[in-house]
Image 1 (cartoon, rainbow, N blue to C red):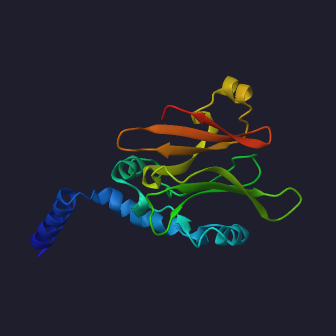
Image 2: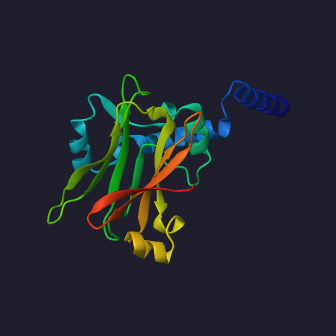
Length: 196
């Protein structure tokens, strides 16, 4: 009986690979999908997103194109491709970044937003970091990365990138590859291309 179970397991894995699915990535994508849900965000952030969510949704692994899915699947630790949470503005409070894609035609356009604590308030405010109606959203994903991965001590001072984390914005198209970091400096987000 064990022999048949092992054989069945081998055939299933081989079929998944031949069928174009990487079982390891597929498995990790399923594990991550729950963290891509709007419920992963604070109540007031969800309320702010509701105005956008009629047409848009948070990008999930299934929204990624082939190249982006392979690139995202190789990341460690694996994070939701449409949510990045970190200390992007200061070292005391969490900021919630989301990459929204169209609900009905996910390949056309995106919105990249950040929700951070409002001064003197318990709620969060919304900032638009980037958006496009033309760039294929299936090529994109975001993730949280520590600032020190891209900025040494001298460049942290030079660019005023003093928060613990940055948001990595990756474009993995068929004929291109680009990565940018969004970092907080002097009261607003700045964008810088990086080697990644």
